[in-house]
Length: 358
Ligand code: UD1
Image (cartoon, rainbow, N blue to C red; front, side):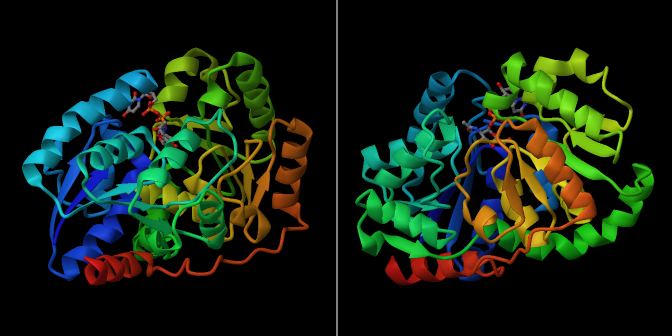
């Protein structure tokens, strides 16, 4: 069976890695297409190295642009790749522009494709990722869901039951595989960053960082909380481009640094007292690790991290942020559990299903 994987942005790489390996173990022929949506070495190359993924067989080099420009560029450059390589199946990951662009190309060419991390919904169509999820799931032939809420969402949207497979969370497969390595590098990282007790911050969503009436009060609150606990803030290029000058004025306890590699970031998530974020994947990783997570969003497409995990939705309530922060530090802490099937075997299930069905 010839499988073509499409990745493009940082959160895709950790999802594709275990699926690639599980299919390789079964002897399938595979190729990897990198759209180039993320292109900085720190957003892309370092992940290929750390996650031990082979170099891309095809690089589409699309770079940045408006959503329409980026999606269109991926489509027009991906179409000839599919036509030449004639895969039996294409796999797309997550909810980024690369995901939906590849999904559209495959469905118009009549090439079957699977969506890994299907069914997640925030029910907020102002999020570009929600549009990407809705479109991709309507078109996919195989929908691999990480949790049961995904199955329910897809059933409600009329997706045929036979196409839906509850497999668990592939990102957690990667976390479980690489946690021992992250533990190993932690003492050195701790020394390099002179860490004692600390918290971790990431912010990149357009709805948080594009508009100063949202971003500035958010940053001010985080900046003042760093007076109580040093906070490490690896900054996404999008946030840095917009706020470089303002970030330089932060309290020195808010440590603004470059994006980190996979192992480094994982080690920090595990050892942080609290994580403040607007990312999707970090809500899941902190739930697995048992680290309190304060999510600066009004909603989440990963509700299981709130219902049974460590996640608390803060929205834009800065008082709630302070309260959540103090509880994470001093208690009482929310009781949390690991969701079912987040067990390191999701990619194996995907590989089994594809091998038996195709
Ligand atoms: C994308 C995904 C988002 C995911 C995030 C993780 C979409 C719609 N969004 O958001 O779901 O959570 O990745 O990082 O696909 N830039 C660089 N260097 C890079 C990449 C980006 O400088 O390597 C800058 C560019 O100026 C670009 C901006 O960051 O315009 C945003 O990048 P883009 O890929 O459009 O979306 P993200 O905000 O990264």
